[in-house]
Image 1: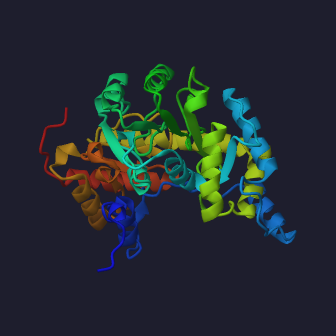
Image 2: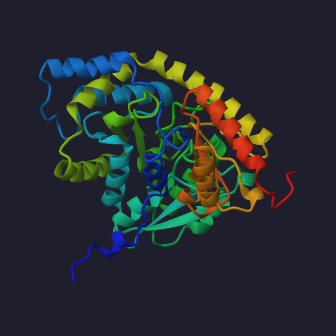
Amino acid sequence: MLSVAKHVQGVRASGIRKFFDIVAEMTDVISLGVGEPDFATPWNMREACIWSLEKGHTNYTSNWGMLELRELICQHLERLYGVGYSPVNQVLVTVGVSEALDLVFRAILDPGDEVVIFDPCYVSYGPCVSFSHGVPVHVPTTVEQGFVPTPEQFRAAITPRTKAVLVAFPSNPTGAVADRETLQKIVDIAREADIFVVSDEIYDRLVYRAPHVCVAALDGAYDRTILLGGFSKSYAMTGLRIGYAAGPPDVIEAMMKIHQYVTLCAPITAQKAAIEALRDGEDSVREMRDEYNRRRRLIVKRFNDCGMPCMDPGGAFYAFPSVKDFGLSSEEFAERLLYEKRVVVVPGSAFGECGEGYVRASYATAIDRIEEAASRIADFVKSLPRAVAVG
């Protein structure tokens, strides 16, 4: 009997997609579920796309990506974080960070190799490891520890089969940000164990309380870290699908080999937009970040005021309030909220076992919509019996 591969059969569908499918059939819905900016891509970046099409730039580029873009990415990382890469062989332009994640695990994993992932985490991390015939090893974190792992937890998860650790701060779904000391200890342990560090830093420009810590810039990290970055979140360019990987030449070369056979190159139109973003996008990044910060303070206050304890997120654009007091699973809570109040949040269980008891709410939506959604959520919560008294 014909069948698809077992390692694919064993991966469940995204818990986010289910809610998007339901919402597509409904009206008067306020979505706090989507993890993408509500801002239009800044005009100068859109204009770069239009101009490139008008000039007939619809051809392939180098498999590595346009040299001009790679040079600008290197200058960008050097200026922000003091970490230097060669545009010739240490940077690969990809179709979003999503492709870069897939490439890096296919490039470094042999069958059965383990990758340490901190739970809760973005929905694609575990499946990307599994698709590469690796084994995701989930390390639990809690709200009491700010959803940041302790070095001791990481050390205990390492086995002879461990090949890499995936670090992702600011975090999707929690908004957690790890401090420099913790990240340095993780790097130190990775160095002792001689394993790779894969650092997803797609939200690096969206931090609110302290400067972003670039993992590759930490002591001892550079030679074993593959930094994944992109333009989707900071520059509101999700649909253009443009990202990059930077790291040791042999790993980036291996990633490029896979990339050239499956996608050839990232779309040239998106690369043109990314060039413009790096040349003249800082004001737009700052304006959007300031607005996200205003929304962050509002939504966290509204959740706490209505009896949904919510950690103050230090980055990204997600709040992760608890629903444990209501005697419902996170999926039951999200489904009832959607059907009864027309507000979309994503159940925390979609992000791993440690996400159960929470929901993810994106504040990448207009502040008046957040106000209305918060009012509907407060009304919904009032209608629920409390399984545990709120402290």
